[in-house]
Image (cartoon, rainbow, N blue to C red):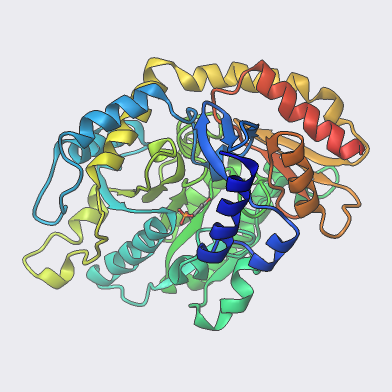
Amino acid sequence: MSDDANRALLERSLAAVWHPCTQMKHHEQMPLVAVSRAEGVWLYDFEGRRLLDGVSSWWVNLLGHANPRIVAALKTQLDTLEHVMLAGFTHEPVVELSERLAKLAPGRLGHCFYGSDGASAIEIALKMSFHFWQNSGKPKKNRFVTLANGYHGETIGALSVTDVPLFRTTYETLLRKSTQVPSPDSRLAEPGESPADYARRCARVLEAHLEQYAGDTAALILEPLVQCAGGMAMHDAEYLRRARALCDRFEVHLIADEIAVGFGRTGTLFACEQAKIAPDFLCLSKGLTGGYLPLSVVMTTDTVYAAFYDDRLARGFLHSHSYTGNPLACRAALAVLDILEQDEVIAANRRLAARINRRCEALRHHPQVKHFRNTGMIWAFDVADAAPGFAQDFYRRAIEAGVLLRPLGNTVYWMPPYIIDDEGIELLVGTVEKLLSA
Ligand SMILES: *Cc1c(COP(=O)(O)O)cnc(C)c1O
């Protein structure tokens, strides 16, 4: 494609496509990037220039673009069954995926309910928890407790349990009230206080809240180990252990939103494993299909399932999406699970993360770098004295240097596909260093 043709495509996009999470007017200054194809960790534009995908295309791509094994599985599925409704019907990929996820997930989460994206999984978990208590003769348990700075998606129900002002403030009057308890974000610990001590202090606030309001509370919802959209805020697993114990003691569900952190992102297949706990509801999406097709799932227990099992229709969980359990998406997810297992990706990631950390030794001590942090395959730091417009400026300059990085406010982070190699690491970390010093 010529430069002219590329420019024409960008103009047509701005005229016809309303881009997500974007003030469209900013594109008067900030050029869109048209991607013609992608392979491995690289996105190619129409001029043959390549960009390193430092954020896994919004955290979804685990195993690289155009991964031949996922592509082959999808092609076979496409020739067999592309879609059938899941109400009254079933098919091999959805059964196999549900069985395999149940074996892999912590605890006994033997029942899978499917949605199409992360926000729909959150809607499902909230409605299911509420309906469970209703079916169990406790209709007053209809409130949700969330962590400060938590993010669970942007549909109205999911936004009601999200605490990121940028997404929430405008829509406040549309939302149902939820209660925020302090985030165990390790950066907020007092000097001399360990992350685990701070987690215990935060858990005491949760305890005090539940002591008073458990009778009105359906569930606590949280992002285990890393609050991603809220600025890659990381906490000690101790908080999850305490939260689980408190939810048990006060008869409140624990909803683990592992939409961003599931499938190895934090160093274990699921983040909850690091606290040796199991939630009552586990929400998964993003990495579930390796970034190939939209799919989400809410996994839950026999106890929850049994409360809906009845002769009366209205006691059933009456929720559906047209593409629930789409066979192509389930097939992609099965291919991802195959690769994670066959290539021992979680173990390989530990070595990969160690290499990346070694490359970050100088960056970690850069005078502008505050709270350098890493969990599994997520790295982040805050930039001291960031100028207004820092995030957009950094994003633009990173693209010019050949790397896709999209800071959250003054937090620079990267969470690359698990197949990044030394050349990619060098370009990624080297570019961050260069941009900070410029
Ligand atoms: C991305 C995300 C969601 C929402 O998922 P969408 O597919 O964007 O609707 C929910 N929770 C967390 C933790 C996320 O990172």
